[in-house]
Amino acid sequence: MSRVVFLMDKIMRRYGMSGKSVIPLISGTACAIPAIMAARNISGWKERLITILVTPFTTCSARIPVYAIIISLIIPDDKVLGIFNLQGLTLFALYALGFAAAIFSAMILNRVLKIKQRSFFIIEMPNYKLPSIKNLIITVIEKTKAFVFGAGKIILALSIVLWFLASSGPAAYDNAEITMSEQTKGTNITDDELSHKIASYKLENSYIGIMGKTIEPVIKPLGYDWKIGIALISSFAAREVFVGTLATIYSVGDDGDDTATIKERMRAEINPITGEKVFNLASGMSLMMYYVFAMQCIGTLAIVKRETNSWKWPILQVVGMGILAYVTAMITFMILS
Image (cartoon, rainbow, N blue to C red):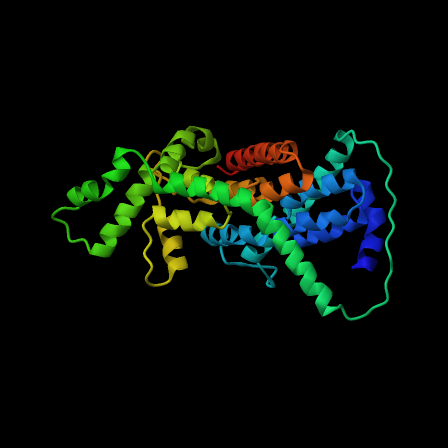
């Protein structure tokens, strides 16, 4: 890694970063949290701050479930040039777009941030040798403790808030069992189907469901309905929660092939106003563009706050990335509609 960092330093400095920024950017494809923590090795504050702010643009593994299910719904399983799979190329394009957004954002931040300092790149070129198992274990333990006791407290608090919003609500939520029992009275419905309908009704009438209904006018220009709005809010705890939330909303059972069932329900979802499918090419691409740029991760915000020792940068980060995601998604939807 020392040699990779040395070779990339001259290139990365064009974008306001250090050669050491390569490690966080690559690590961000797994998870932005340890990637941002890896930026501690960057000595210059400006280079380190830019790296921290742009690393979440790289496509992390939490985005893959969202991409996978949306791509399978809107992109045909065709061959390009007889070799490449169109769905695979779409996923590759999303990864490339994330990296491009990180580099472009770094260029802008390098000019916008008025932090005057001059940093020097100094790195040891060690001989190739096997790592010390003892040092490796100690490092892992220390880094894990730092995350759990530092950012973990913030993540836990915010996750509890989201859980409360999704698990409680006004009178309609409390009377869900009675309401659904009366609505399904006299119908040939199984107990499992009834329980799924109750769960879906509760989610719709929970506080987070009310929030989804409230933000529907805001997300409507992106091609989303209130159900997707709930998924967007829920996925702020973790992006992959998006699929699980939609599964609950669409009353998907636990039997059979869960993924196929979710896809079938999502594919069959019809907008009652327009009569068109909710998940079509326009709305699907808009949704993926939103997730490429949006900061939908409590854990990342918590670790940014911890690493910068200020709420200023995570707030600017979530607002800036949110505006970029919204505008990009809206333009995508308008072009493809």
